[in-house]
Image (cartoon, rainbow, N blue to C red; front, side, top):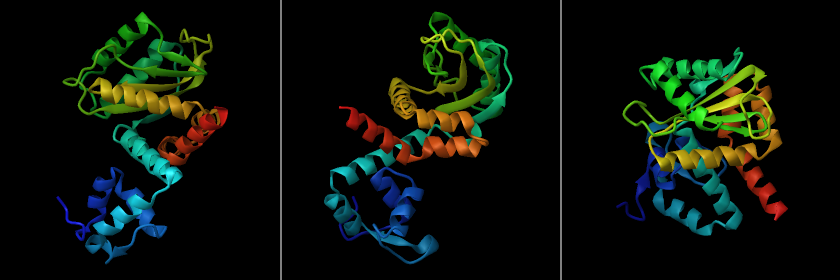
Amino acid sequence: MLEANSMMTISEVAQYLKVTDKVVNELVNSGVLKKVGVGKNARIEKAGVDSWLASLDHKEAEDLAMRRVVCHFQDYFKVENIVLDFTADNKYEAIATISKKARDLKIVKDHRWLYEVVIAREDLVSTAVGNGVALLHPRHMHPTKIKVPTILFGRSTEPIEFDAIDDQPVNLFFMLLLHNDKQHLFSLSFLSKFLMSAENKNLLTHAKTPEAVYKALSGYHTMLRNADEAEDKK
């Protein structure tokens, strides 16, 4: 256990706060946390971190909680997991395209196996949740066949009939390839909150590059806005 007067690296502070190094650097650059030294020799006093945590008001604590949620999502979602503007005539071709992306990333060895288990789930009941979005996933968890927990995103050039609950075609696809129910439920919750906002959905629909999609989904401010909007409706 670290002593109160311990000096911590950026990575140690990130682990302590359950965020990424980038978030810690943002806190340093904004003057919230103070560091001593530069580069790899930079250190932050643990007492200063604890003092800042103890001083957080309700809104600031919510802000930190949202940052943690987004950082958690980033464990599964990377910019290379995104495939934009593919062509597909039906849902089977769309699922095949995203399955091949998983193979190319070495998330699975056999994209045909992945295609089959996702289609089997789709044949039970559509994973299209409405408003042009589908949350694809296998019926069961397959941690031995899925190398690392991963979320893929795909966008088709034209909307595809997908037996959605609102009878609307789909052109935004998330494929959830996770190892356990906890990861799966967290990711469903994260995406559901993000997609509550029409503005967020528009960001995904009109993004020109994978980097723009990633920025939209990894921006914690979008989650804060959704939380504020939900609170205002109460």
